Image 1 (cartoon, each protein chain N blue to C red):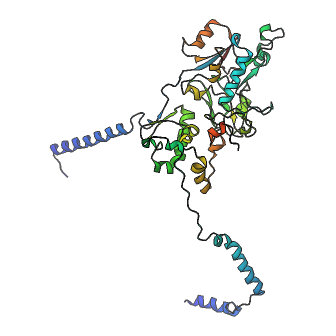
Image 2: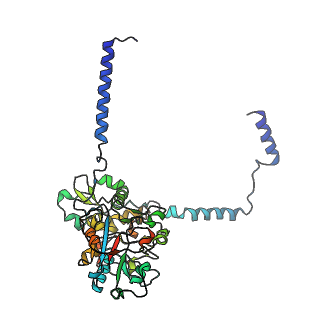
Length: 258
Length: 162
């Protein structure tokens, strides 16, 4: 088959045009964000590079502590099981010597004696629970929150063994009969899964502060640790703070002003 | 027929293979066979002509009736939801829990909060006639409801216990 230069150039031009159109279509179809455009973050969601919490013990009293626990456990449908071996807790009280075993000494400052320390999941920057989870049911989000996917939890309790803070609870039985007043907007859990504090992820997504922070009248502070002007950073600059078992290297992100 | 086959047939005839045989205790055996058929066939004969119709999920609730006419649609067209609601819910679950995205843009470009308990059940507030009716018929036990509350309002008011 003989073709002359003119015919050859014509055909090359036509092929290039077809290729160009096809390429353009591919760009249109695969435009970034196009495929997942129907899933969006809520416009008023609170976001951060690294969420962190400060517990200011000078503003903490018995009433505040009880309010925080009640608010959290109510809006997350946490069952009230009156058995220390089977109880479920997201946020609870520890005495100083138990919350900070390394820092305890025989003659401790009087202001710590019998003082209720509010403890919860520390949302560690280096979370051991995440390392051991065999199903990735728990993982660290980009904003630092150590999140739990109940759908994927198989109840092996490795995470509970790994957590040095006892922040995780296992559902030894169906929790529903132990929920005194149900909260309709949040699901419950079922028998055989582990649960813990989630820094109120569902509230942050709606632009609300965590429930305990909101009800604490300033005793709890929650903001972005990566933001130098944030409230948490301000407190850390101005006060001496301690963290629970920081020597273990999990880098907990709940700070206590004592 | 080949010679070989004829040979085999002849050999069989010599052994009495083609002679009529007597069934020992034939009465008992035949009665036994009839009873066996009766027992095995009972379920079929009993339900003959009574095939239960596939149930229709109840698509209207007071909450749906309360919506303006134009908004009485689901997040996706009805046919799509009928076939794919479980896939959609799985996708919603992953987007919400693992990616932190909570809003879904439906086919009408309306925004919905992705939540089984809060969004789906807000309109379809009739779990028994909507979800349960078909699932029961098709013998499906989705494990959504061991955590998600199927009647959240009644549950919160303490009106319903499992």
